[in-house]
Image (cartoon, rainbow, N blue to C red):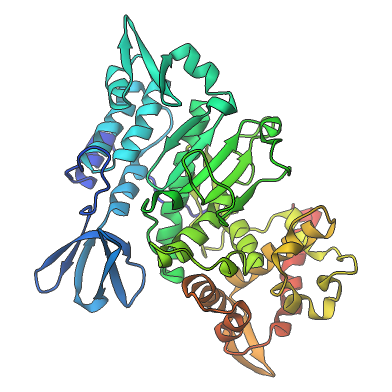
Length: 468
């Protein structure tokens, strides 16, 4: 199984080579000089690189929401925060002692990664609750021979911290470079979830960025930062009027810090990770790097939200099937290497008939109706919902994994994978795109019906119990 490379070199030596010394901004100020573009004429430009995956340009965001674009042919080199984050993640591994965990904190600080340094400091305290350096970095205060830990804006004893942080009303709130986490699941799980999400972010930008042309998610404005509310169990989750995890970019739900870019999930007994963590992470990344990033400083129109929910479900499921590794140390398959396998349940449900009345009950035009399904067909208690979601997941996986020819009559006019990437770029990256017209354009007016038989034939072997 092909996975992203993880080095086995000694931590200190490798980080010294990979993580350059970067001056940190004063206090909690946002660092508007964190990235550098070196031009072929020898000039250097500083700012926040928010787009460097587009083959035509590199985009720099400046204080005051000002943007500068540089044609790709004029750019010699781009030095950006994400490269330093990737280097940091490349040397983290399970089983480190307190001193080794602290060395990672110092390396993150030296590399200009203050959010990851603080998150790593919490990992130090899990290994060594008396570590003075970690406590000082996190703003804790010595009291006699012990330390007082910060929780909900107050300093409390370690015992009180551990007890009260498992109550949703005094829950733990932690941040990483791109995410906020609010949870009552305890400190260990909190750090695991954030490192999992940050790992997903890096994989998304590195491996899907060249196709999707996303913008970097920066925490300005603050309310748009991706926020995960993770409950320790379903009982803690229960005050919400549903029993399934969800992502909500509508702004109708806000967090304790005023966040409007919200995902909510929970743990089930004996689970290592929260339910649908990577699926929700992928949905958040679709909106945060494709939609919100394009409208930074201005709200996207409400009708754009959830305008193509079927494809969000599909891509999120495909992404999650690439994820693995220990909690807090995620590993991801490199896409399109032949290692992908559709899961049995999704395959089986994709083939089960949908009950009428429902647009998917007409199997003759199933794909045409699938991409036209509105958001309301995916919420509620209908027994058809799992069947519709499974079809979204298997169809997106089919397009991406097989890259099938799309026909108009007897002539192949488009490719499945290319058309899907075009669809994402148009629907989420342009403010006036129509989801139906974008699909037609991406396939060069090829007909969806030409994919019906090939899609179901590809799914069928995955639904076999022999290959389960």
